[in-house]
Image 1 (tube, rainbow, N blue to C red):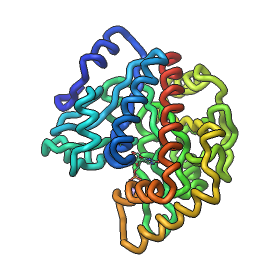
Image 2 (image 1 turned 135 degrees about the vertical axis):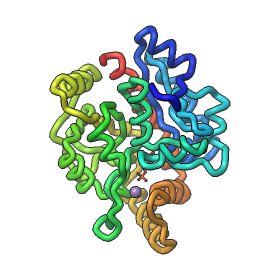
Image 3 (image 1 turned 120 degrees about the vertical axis):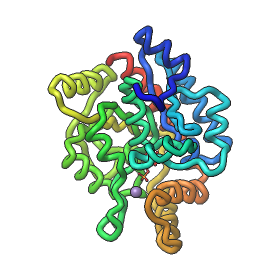
Length: 299
Ligand code: PSU
Ligand code: MN
C-alpha cells in the first residue's frame, strides 16, 4: 500500500473477506468510447462481474489519488470531464504528484491493480506494436507491463490497427504467456481470428488460473495475456473493418498524430466510419468481464 492509493469501501471489504476481485481500466471510458456508451458500458461491465460472483474495481486517478473502485458519480466524471490525461506507466507519478485526473491504460491499470493485490483484470484490447513501427518505434508500454506485473489481463486480442504478428513476436521476446481461451487463433478484436496462431490454449477458467499459479510458483515475474475471441454473431467482417482502419491510419499519418494520441485517434475514427464497431467493442468487453470474473474465482 502507498500514500496515494484509495480503495473503495466495497473493494476494502472484498479484500478483507477474500472475495474474488476483477479490475477494470478507465482509458476505455475516457478515451476509448464516446459518451454515453462509455459510462453505460462501464456500469454494465461492473454488473456482469457482480453477476458472476466477483467484485468489480474500476481504476482511475482522480485529483492525484489512485482510486481502486469507483462509484457511479466517479464513473460519470471519468466519462464526461474534459482534459483527463491518458496514463501509462510513465505518466502515473506525474499525475499523482500534480493532483491531476487521469484514465489508466492497460499498463497503468495493471500497476494499480497489483498495488491493491488484485490479480485479474478485464479489458477490450491491449496496446501493441503499431504498423509502421520501423519508422515510429511505436510499441505500447502495455506489452512491457505484461512482462513485469503479475496480473492476468483478459482481452479480445489486439485490433488490426496494430501489427499483430510483430505484437506477438514482442510478447514472445518479453516472455509473456499468451493463452487462447477456447481457441488456437489469436483474435483480432472485431474478429475471432487473425493471421496469427497461438501456442497455448485453455478451455475453462480454472485452466487459466492454473497456468498463472504455476507461473507464480516458478517465481517468474510478469502477468499473462488471455485472448478471448468475440462471439461469432458479433464479429465485423474483415472487408468492412479493414477499410475503416486503413482510412483512419492514413488520416493519422496525414495529421501527424503521434505518441500516446495515436490509439485514441484511431479508435474514434474507426467508430465514426463503422458505427457497428462500437457495439462489437461493448459486446467483447462484456464477454471479457464475465470470463475474468470466473477466472478470479479460481485464483
Ligand atoms: N485498444 C483498444 N481500446 C482501447 C485501448 C486499446 O481497442 O481502449 C486503450 C487501452 O487502455 C490500452 C491503450 O492500454 O489504449 C494503449 O495505448 P497505447 O497504444 O498508447 O499504449
Ligand atoms: Mn504508443
